[in-house]
Amino acid sequence: MVAVASLGLLGCGSEKDTPANKDPVATTAAPRDAGAVAIDAAAPARKVFLHGAGRCGECHEKMFDEWETSAHARAATSPLFKAASASAHETTCARCHTPLAADAPKDMITTEGVTCDVCHTLREPKPAKTGAGFRLAIDDMVKFGPRCNLDDHYFHRMGCSPEHQQAELCGSCHWWEPRGVPVFTEYADWKAGPAAAANQPCQDCHMPKEKAPLAVGAPVRTGVPHHGMLGLAADLRARALGLAVSVKDEAGTLAVTVALTNAGAGHFVPSGLPERRVVVVARVVDPAGAELAVERRSLGRVLVDAKGAEVPFWRAIKVGSDSRIAPGATWSETFSFTPPGAGVVEIEVLYRSASETLTRELALPEVESERMTGAKVPFGGPGTGGRAKLPKTVTVKPPVAKKRPAKQGPAKQGK
Ligand code: HEC
Ligand code: HEC
Ligand code: HEC
Ligand code: HEC
Ligand code: HEC
Image (cartoon, rainbow, N blue to C red; front, side, top):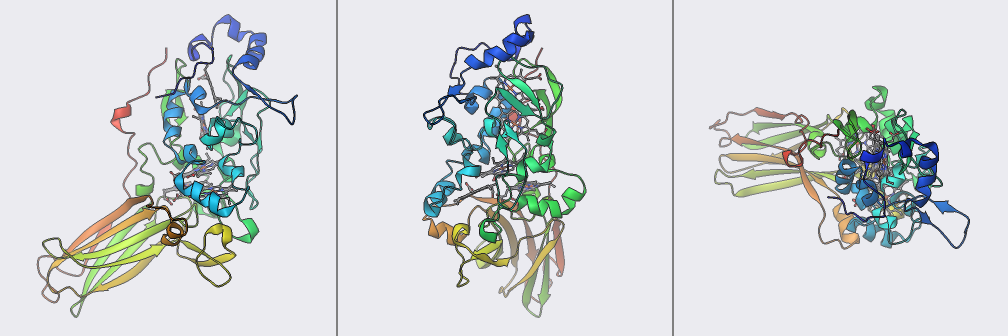
């Protein structure tokens, strides 16, 4: 749950309808004492209104619990980012990973990366190749969100921002092509693809809606967005790809054709960091399960230096190769095996958070690896037909969206 650092304010939604809080004087005056941070040496007159996510979470428990598990909460602290930014020696990284670093006390919001007060003060999002086209309205105690009919609260006033339901809000960080090298292109890819044409912004897939109160003690509302960014059950990655595996017997050789279709994403798969990889592992095992042969193919965008060698994006000058799968498109390749007798073809499709080259370069001990999809096709001895007659095709559709894990249960009802 929420780490409660009491700053002397009372509860959450429960007081919001008392006459004192309805009083316009009280609503504008109260935030000035509401734990806002006064900064600083360079501009002594400037006052900024920033809070750690834990403070927001005292009232917005649901959003906090979801955000805490998201990559946004780790934007400043993930081992991969820390190693990368140390290697890159660039200050530009902070613009998207710790946008509040210049304004917030070091021990507070900086470590929270893309925290509540980044997105909920974010104004005028303008996605561009140059990246980070936005302004943060931190000079006032207004929190911007998608609803335009909420009553102000004593803790913060409500800002009306239809942009919060538009792809441009996300695109202001999720697009960056420094020195002409495409690094983060989710927004540009989305914009050029079928999801944008169908009016389906990032939030449709990444922030699915539920019925819940916006704040503890506030009324239950519909259309409340999940803040985990990978679906209600964090299963978006497992819903990205459709798979078809065809196994043929060609004169004693098994020809295994693997077709992967990007059925679920509004952009290329993999996307995001250029070093993300989708790894297709094709394995043949004997009837007892012992591995007879294995082959791998790695899909992704490979950025290279002047000599054509794969290098991390901050040293790259151009794209060397690109085998990402466009939305709706299918990637297909055939593997050949010559097993001695009957067995099973096992296909596993994995998401790898960093390529082997980057992992080695940054001396990372291990990277996140996740199963996206897979299939098993039993076959008889080559040339014999056997227990499973060839040719044979197994198709795995992307699973439907899962509900949130039962453990967390439905949100508490407000009065
Ligand atoms: C003391 C309680 C409290 C705290 C702390 C709090 N909020 Fe709120 N917030 C509310 C209430 C109450 C609502 C309105 C709920 C309703 O009417 O359904 C709200 C609404 C919102 C909205 C919706 C605005 C809109 O127009 O759509 C956003 C966004 C928001 N808060 C962000 C934040 C952020 C960011 C923080 C931390 C800096 C924060 N809140 C801290 C009580 C709080
Ligand atoms: C202020 C910049 C910023 C904004 C605005 C922003 N993001 Fe992000 N996002 C990031 C950064 C930085 C990361 C990488 C964090 C990490 O892994 O270190 C990230 C990571 C992600 C991930 C990866 C999730 C995972 O678990 O790997 C998704 C999905 C995502 N963002 C979606 C969105 C969506 C949807 C929006 C708009 C509603 C959005 N982002 C707005 C900066 C931003
Ligand atoms: C990466 C950006 C991002 C971060 C970080 C983020 N939010 Fe949000 N939040 C959004 C967007 C976008 C919406 C509106 C999405 C929609 O309606 O489709 C939203 C909606 C909300 C709402 C209003 C929900 C409604 O139904 O009106 C509240 C309250 C809220 N966020 C609180 C928080 C709190 C508290 C945190 C930190 C724990 C947080 N948010 C972190 C982007 C963000
Ligand atoms: C039609 C649904 C859909 C839309 C629209 C969509 N996404 Fe995604 N997104 C997905 C799926 C499915 C995945 C998981 C597959 C993957 O990792 O590539 C994903 C993955 C991601 C990732 C993680 C990349 C990685 O591999 O770590 C980021 C970042 C992201 N999306 C950002 C965005 C942004 C920004 C937008 C809007 C400009 C957007 N997405 C629009 C479905 C969608
Ligand atoms: C214009 C905004 C922007 C800038 C500038 C930026 N990033 Fe990012 N970064 C992102 C986004 C958005 C993601 C999420 C993509 C994803 O999840 O694959 C991300 C993800 C990452 C990741 C993956 C983190 C993880 O934990 O998986 C690394 C590493 C990274 N960035 C390194 C850097 C470095 C190093 C710099 C500076 C040289 C930098 N970034 C500058 C927006 C930015």
